Image (cartoon, rainbow, N blue to C red; front, side, top):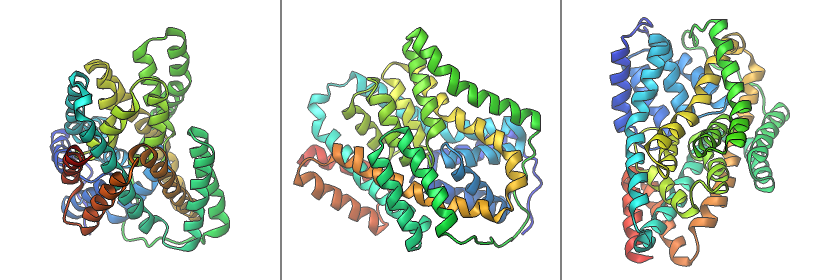
Length: 393
């Protein structure tokens, strides 16, 4: 399949991703499907092989996978300017919607909307459950990878927080070496080629590490709310694998447990985020909006920045290692562990906070059934769940 030359005006990159930012509903897995249709099949900016490698790389490193894929496509087509344009256009619609919702929520008397908020929390149960099922079908197709997922979930539940997540992923990588046979991927076109200078990669790696080291120290010394928020978001974006729904437990620990937002508002906003197009990480704008527009902007940039920096840093290394069968074998184990992490997140905090009585469970089952029919998109399910909660709960 012929591929278009890798030079595209920044304006075209921006407009293409803006259309996706306005229409790409359904979360990170759906976004990757949209990208496949637009950039591989329609525009032919990438070969199927190059796109598969890019998705694999973005799943292997921390950060929001679909946004990192979009960032890399912009980078490949129009350099750093194209990468920034791609991220801005894809993120802006959902970020503005979440900002508006966050500011409106602050001004509302929530006592009059407890049923609505409970409906959104129950909807989050159904959506995360469906995301778990969808990911499990593709990432754990055999009993060996299902075993890895179960063990990863146990580790994440026994060790809540960042260390439990990292331990689960490390376990998945190690078990892959024993349980999973290396598979040679069919080569159906030129591989991923994104030219990054070693100097730029080194600067990005330095900035990534500096953010992890300096932000906590600055936040502790200054006790400034904005720095505390930036530190929390940067750490969440740096340490979560899989992005999307998997960031939920880490964001909960970094924000609710630190008093940046209360638990009810957190889950209500997360439930509402399912109705938005674009990346789920835009939920960070909702959290920041509790403290104003500037805080929302800081939260948004802080959670996306580390994933983009890390991607630039590792691209030259990937160009060298991408043909190694052992790396692909390890990636299969890590992906299975991501399914386990999502299973752990489904139980705590989603189910523990959203299901309190049999009516909650019944509504969750009904909403899950609607999703399973394939006739009700997620963006429509959320208002339906919220309205049902307002009327019934």
